[in-house]
Every structure is written in C-alpha cells, then in structure tokens.
Amino acid sequence: MSSDNKVQCIVVTPEKTELETSCDMLIVPLFDGEIGIQAGRAPMVGRLGFGLMKIKTGTTVVEWFVDGGFVQVTREGVYVLTDRLLKPEAIDRNEAEADLKKANAMMSNSPESAAFKERALEQARAKARLAK
Image 1 (tube, rainbow, N blue to C red):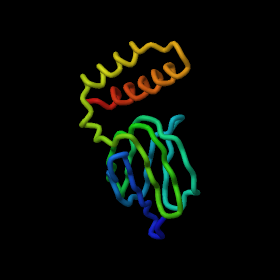
Image 2: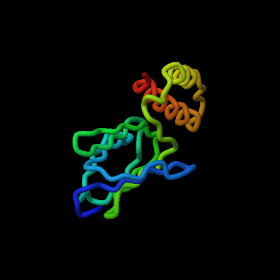
Image 3: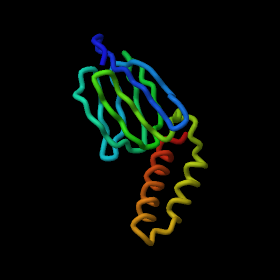
C-alpha cells in the first residue's frame, strides 16, 4: 500500500483488468458480510460474495456490482478477482427477476446441483436488489 494513505485497487475479471485506481477506502462484499479496507490493512485473502463494491475517495463514492470471486490484500495493494464487474445501473430489473425465477426452478437432487442452485440464487438476489 502506498505511504500517502491511499489504497491501490486492481479489479481483474477472466477477460481483462477492469479497473485500476487509488482510493481512501474500499468496501467489498464477502460471502459472510462485508469488509472495509484502508491503507495499512494487514494482508489477507477473502472470498467475495455477490453485491456492491464501494470505492470511497474523499466524499465521492463509486459503486460496482461484483460477481463473487476473491479479494487479496497485500502491502502493495488490493486485488479483486471477480467473474464480472458491472455498474449497478447496467443491471436490468426484468433480467434480474428472470434469473431469480430460473434459479428457483433449478433442480437440486445432489450436493453439487444444490450448491450450484444456491450460488445462482445468491447471485440473482444480489442483482435483483441492485436493479433499477
């Protein structure tokens, strides 16, 4: 992390580096809550949930939807590895509701299919909460 109390943040999807920025604080959704990360945070690795990532710089807050993945905090910065990064306003309400219906209708007759259904439900619920 830099010495000027800024957090260096890099967000990577399977396709490319989506975002490189510095901020005062980064808030990411974890699978079991959320965490705020400021400069000087001890190194850690966490599993991301589905939801809003907030980037705070001064009084400005920029929000992004992260689609699960992992966050790693090092001395050099914060690395967010996610399947997708979307602006919340890019999430279509009708599409999010259709995804939720589809996830609810999934069969879960094995541990693997139950885990897949639960992941799809969590993802669809998060998108539906954020859809405009």
